[in-house]
Image 1 (cartoon, rainbow, N blue to C red):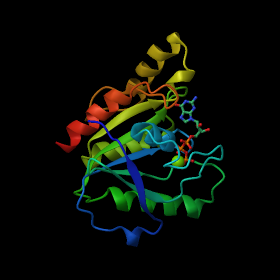
Image 2: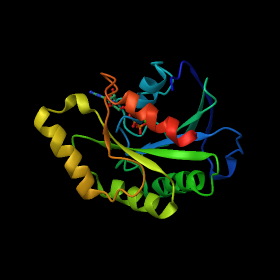
Image 3: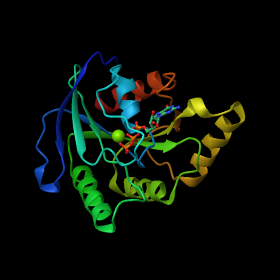
Image 4: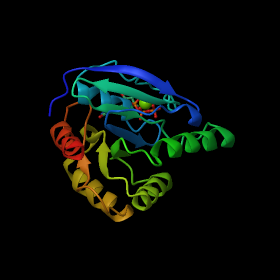
Length: 194
Ligand SMILES: Nc1nc2c(ncn2[C@@H]2O[C@H](COP(=O)(O)OP(=O)(O)OP(=O)(O)O)[C@@H](O)[C@H]2O)c(=O)[nH]1
Ligand SMILES: [Mg+2]
């Protein structure tokens, strides 16, 4: 599969505002600043389509994008941003959970984990939640361009140790800088929507 173009559709901030969509969707989730928007941009080969920022917590809505292959990409708000109030955190959780629950059009979720650090407790929480939900997911270890050769093997084994991987395949390494992992990720997405 190759995505040649992509356009931003709309954002949802309130759990009650999700629309029924006719197209299959792949969603991207992970802690704030893990590289979700950058990955999305790399995947579709368009730099500015999802906003990338130095400031964590930038993506506070669920953002919907439409590709030329009739597949929707869904950028979920990052979790675990410390500077956000408890009530706001709960609101985000509710928003994400509402989107993920009973969504027939959701064909898979990409769980992004920073390759430089072990999965956080919030990553483990999402992982457990996904295992119970039955949603198919793939763990993607981001910012792999920042790893040394040694770290690469280590981060793969740490991810497999700290997370319980019940669906999908092995975690993959990804870099939005170099494009590492893009082919593999597209292959997985393709298999999810067949
Ligand atoms: N070296 C390197 N930096 C990356 C990579 N992916 C993202 N970054 C950087 O990490 C920072 C956060 O990237 P974003 O793509 O905005 O992360 P996000 O997960 O969308 O963040 P939120 O929207 O805040 O949840 C930016 O400064 C990016 O340039 C990567 O593969 N390699
Ligand atoms: Mg983002």
